[in-house]
Image 1 (cartoon, one colour):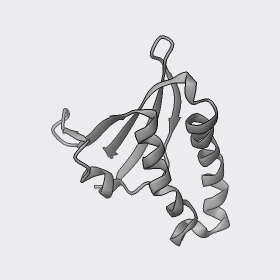
Image 2: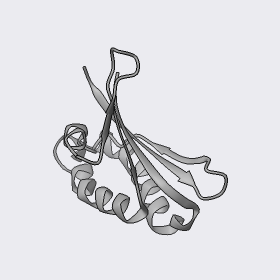
Image 3: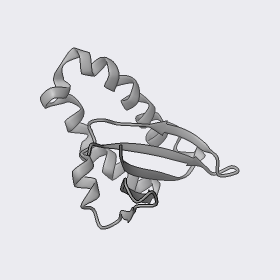
Image 4: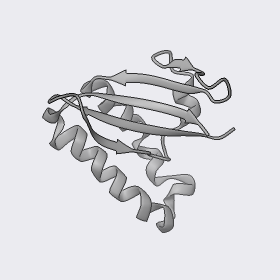
Length: 111
């Protein structure tokens, strides 16, 4: 089954979701092996891997995967048209508007 990565930014104020992105260049299999993730299988059919990250940890994770956004298959202009806006959203959340966020939730989900 295929897996995707979803990053959700949770606001300090009222804990509402203020960011939701799905960065295809994040290696879902690497994340699934990360000990910080908890595995759930509520439906009995599909697995989810979840972890909450502080700003500092999310920045480190983002910088770890940043090179993948412009290498391999993602080098093509077709992919870059999709990736650049997502990268901008993530960069703004992590480096410009970071004071709005309480935490970041990373979900690797099977579909």
